[in-house]
Every structure is written in C-alpha cells, then in structure tokens.
Length: 205
Image (cartoon, rainbow, N blue to C red):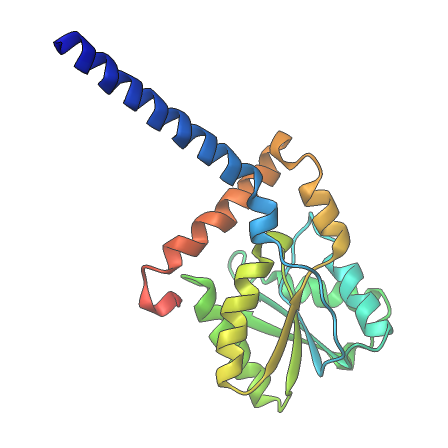
C-alpha cells in the first residue's frame, strides 16, 4: 500500500514538473507576441526619441518620420551613460548630420531612472511645458506594449495624446531566430522581468 502511495505521489510530481516546464517553454516562446505591440504612427507635435542604442536603426527612423511630416520637432532623450556623457547629445548630432535642421532638435537629459514611470513623468512634464498636445514616443520593440500602457497613462494625466512605436526594422532584427542569440534573449527576458517587478513599487506604477 505504501509503495502504491509513493508511486502515485511520484507520478503527481512528475506531471506537475512536466506541466511547469511546458508552460515555461510556451511562455518563453510567446514573449515577442506578449511584449511587442503593433506599430502605429500618427501626425503629432513632437517625436520623442527615447531608444538610443548602437543596435537600433532609430536615428534613421526618426529622420524618416520627420521628413515625411509626422512632426515638426524632435526631442532626443536619455539618462547619462557616464560622467556628463549623454547619448541623447550624440543622437542629436547624428540627426543634424543627416540633414535635420538643428533648431528643430532638442535634448532632454534625465537622471538615471529607478524605473520607467519616473522617466515618463519627467518627459510628460517637459512635453506639457512646451505646449505640445500630441507626441510620438519611439521606444524599443520589446518594451512597446508595456510602455504604451504605462506612458500613455502618465501622459493622459497631462492631457497629452501619446502614440508609442518603434522602427519596424528593429522588430525584424530582434524577432528573427531570437532564441538563438544571447543579446536578443537577454532583451526579451529583461523586458518581461521589469513588468511584474514594477508592480510591487508604487513609484513605478
């Protein structure tokens, strides 16, 4: 009888572990669909360039949107990367080099954030101070769904319409065989971890 009970218990443990592993794998391979929102672009007052990274094509995308008339102003945004070094300054110089009039490109330096909500509050305050009513936030594909919800809620309090998008080429690069490359997996996992973690802290909501 005891042997029967032990076998039944062992079988239950194996089934639970198998279901956990299968569920984890399904969740893992579903990350792109869960994290990446569909791209959308509208005419706005300002483009918020908030995805400055060597692996992205964001500068090209921002310049293209400007030339197509989606906005008349661009704000390059970043916290500091090291002492008095802000990637936003270099993004602005690059956009000027690409032919965007320098008077239409501004820079917003942010403190190093504890969580995205703190940065979005500062960005929303800046947009409000400039009198802009609609903004297009350029972000990373893997952060687009969460940031669309989070930033949208913060901007709404300032009565600012917000559209969140990313360069389609970046999505293609990120999602192609993403589970085979460390940097892609790392970005997906980091983006997924941030969401439940932020829910624990009131200042991050």
